[in-house]
Image (cartoon, rainbow, N blue to C red; front, side):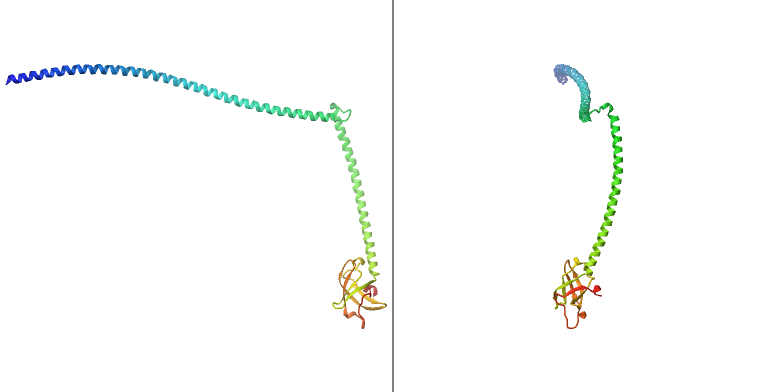
Length: 261
């Protein structure tokens, strides 16, 4: 029995040794493989670090170039602004130059129109002399104007006096015509009790005028004026004034009542 255990133990030891040897070889192979992988990884990391360094350097250079570009852009903008300002100044100077040329041309035209013998050197003195002469002329003109205004006022006063005299003459003439009125009854309307007389405003008749109607040396009756036209007068017959047995008829004479009295 002991032999059997010894044999089994020997077998187990041989198997274990075999597997240990086999595992040792695999472990060595794996270790060698890991070592190679580590070397390759280290190489890749070295290359990656190198590339990162290059990229960082490139980024730095790019940033520097971008900064330089920004500076140059600002310089360009500044130059553009200066150029625009210079162009504006040139345009303004050109406008001023053109305006000066225009004024010079106008002055030349004025100089050409100056009276014979007048020179620019003596222009101020001659202008002052002209101003003095103009002021004296204006003063004399003002005096004449005031005199003319006075004469006009006298003429206006005389005209008003003349118009007043003519009005008085006309009023007297109308009064005379009215007082010497001899008119005729040209129509009679007995139904409505009115007559038409062939005299009106042109004879100085108004609605306040009082009429008498006569026939020969006899008074027929009185009239009350209703309306006065230019050459006609419409008047109502006053029945209470009609003489007994008489009536107003066309052709009867019409005179003023106050003149008859």
